[in-house]
Amino acid sequence: MVVSSSTSDFFSSFVWSALFLFLIFLLAFVCILFLVRIHFHRAKEKNDRNYLNVAFFHPYCNAGGGGERVLWCAIQALQSKYSLIRICVYTGDTDSSPEEILQKAKERFNLTLSNVEFIYLHKRTWVEASRYPRFTLLGQSLGSLVLGFEALRSFVPDVYIDTMGYAFTYPIFSFLAGCKVASYTHYPTITTDMINAVQSRRKTCTNRGYIARNPFLTFGKLMYYRMFAAMYKFVGRFSHINIVNSSWTEDHVNSLWQRPMITFKVYPPCDTTDLQTIPLHRKIDGKIKIVSVAQFREEKDHPLQLMSMYELRQMVPEEIWDKVELVLIGSTRNEKDEAYVKDLKDLAKHYSLEENVTFKINIPYNQLKTELEEGLIGIHTMWNEHFGIGVVECMAAGLIMIAHKSGGPLMDIVEESNTSRNGFLAADKNEYAQTIAKILVLSEDARNRIRESARSSMNRFSSQEFKINFLRAVEPLFGQMKNS
Image 1 (cartoon, rainbow, N blue to C red):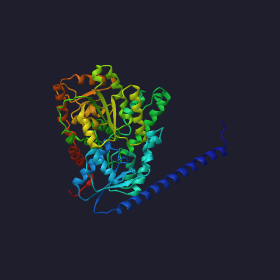
Image 2: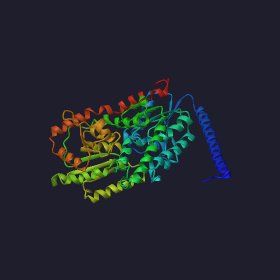
Image 3: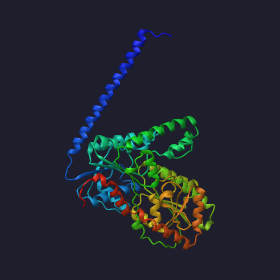
Image 4: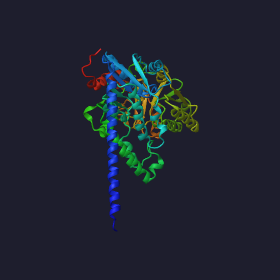
């Protein structure tokens, strides 16, 4: 086939025109990028230089979960060490006043804070999972850029600390605004476990059954995950200090970001001091309470707790079953979480468990402490829980803990050796039910040995230990600042 000279000239002209337009677009993009950079740098220069301005990025700071305890304890730690410091929190909780947010922190975590400013963000819906029924990870991550730009337009800090894992915001704060960036990662946005689950076509909460069953959808999702992992690795390079909450998270962050020299493991602060005032040796009269402490989110796998209770009913005498009560304690952040709670209540009715299951939602700290004091067993069922603050709280309070045989509980918290057992691990409904039944028939001396071992191992997870290790990790960001 012979190509005419005019046709060849047309294609050549088209290619060169397309290349020229691309270069023009690229040049315009770079110019805009540097103009934005100059704007944010000038905005930062206008800050009061008598103080070091520190901003925490935590759009759900009023949620009342373990991540929020990290936020407030980190702020307390910085305020206790540095006097010339201004603390701001970027939050999307526009329906709560600063006083209400701090009051909830006091009620939920027994933490008193002051001199904290709040910068309200009005575009939080951009990071809501419900906004992205497909490609949720990518949608939320790109949405965090919108939220990050809104935050920067309101205030440009000297030090930016992300305590929720929005890694895609790091480049805009580091490169565009010239901030020093630190991250506290509870759970990587993507993990090698998630990629492996797709590759092996295994159904999980992040890999739906219809995808796992279809080889073409599996291939597409695998490519998507690998592309996203490459993007996640790129944006992670803009963080100057990486803090992780457990050995499990540390392994995944190091495998993805590959920066072990600036990655520090700092266990999240757990209320071990106050909870250890609860009497350790206790007689359980009347109800046999099994206590679950976890935010009401799908990944916490509360249905596994209900299914375990259903299995337990087949294993214990009726007179024992009548005394058993599963108490589900947790916070809800939004309508999706509230719908999840409703589904759990419907599931409890489906299994005819409504007489043996109680829900305690968004309760204050004093009520949480009372429930822990009255409990015998603690239960936690999330697969690959990054750490497990609820696990630690239950163990510190003297509950005999059963946690999932994976993630943080397996690697950092629960010890099952005969000489130093401080709790139990389980992987499915049968193992959970069998372990509960086993605990119910243990002698009081055997229970007390487990309680004592658990409590003695909890000091490494205290708020004081968190503050010491957090300050040590972020110290390079604060240079020669004078201490309080």
